[in-house]
Image (tube, helix red, strand yellow):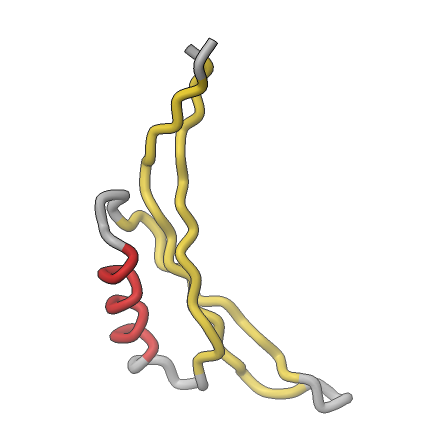
Length: 74
């Protein structure tokens, strides 16, 4: 049986540093933007991340694209 993976969407996750803890380590929080179209290219998601990063009150430490797929064993 062949496994079929069908893209269903993506999530953009932006990490921001909201401060430091009592030991001086950075406190990182994640901002999640759900329901991105699966058809968006990596460049388009990156460009969206840059735009949204400019709207954040805290410094951005990174961004990730998380892809969602439906797996069917047919």
